[in-house]
Length: 128
Figure 1 (cartoon, helix red, strand yellow):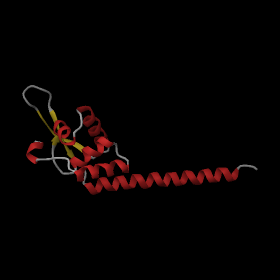
Figure 2 (cartoon, one colour; figure 1 turned 135 degrees about the vertical axis):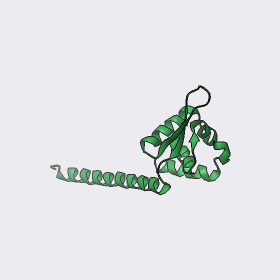
Figure 3 (spheres, one colour; figure 1 turned 120 degrees about the vertical axis):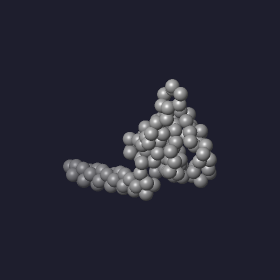
């Protein structure tokens, strides 16, 4: 499947994956997400080849992205009598994913600001 797309992980893709990582995604999840936002259907084996990760790393990244509901299984392929291969696809638009990331960051910072004010209030209440 991936071969028909002629996919490769470019320097631009590396930069996008690094930005996702800086934002807070796990490094391998960032690489897999960067590939899947190209709107392609890929098996984990194809993902391994394109993003240069080992099978367990891809599996963990896919699980992470599926928990966020950003990636889902679109179908399964059975070759011969082996285990069926799952085919993965992006489940949300890039803008939806970026909005979720932004909202998570905003919520995280708002909580930290509240924590700072709580510390300030607690310290000012202490008897001298």
